[in-house]
Image (cartoon, rainbow, N blue to C red):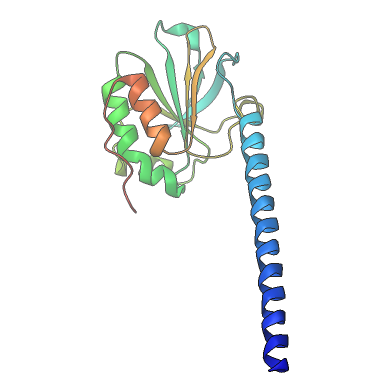
Length: 189
């Protein structure tokens, strides 16, 4: 009987320790998530930020100047990489957005990698100009890093919207609401 009481007591102590450890870890995870969200928000362009024109290379290797003032409509920059899994999942959304938004904005694709870029563009039927080989200063100013990312820039060079990530969940809803369209959603690869 004494042994059962001791075992029960030990079990209760272990359960309490386990519960306290779980609460501690849950709090740490929440703290870490809050920190990650803060870092993300600080490392992204904000609405109203001023961005400069820049040069990039087209698929034929020619240098082209991307100048926002050369058009009277906003410019939609779609930043991607050919080997990005989420870019591949998001491609049907981008194709649809490019078709539906044409006329209301200029669509430009910016690849962070030129590896297999032409094949990627053809295979995915990307029907908008695509550029690569951006200078490091440009990727830093635009805070590019994660892909996909979509930035809408006014003819004056002001950020109107910045949607980091694929168009899923709330982000999909934001893009749909802004452009008044219904996106097809991401595809599983």
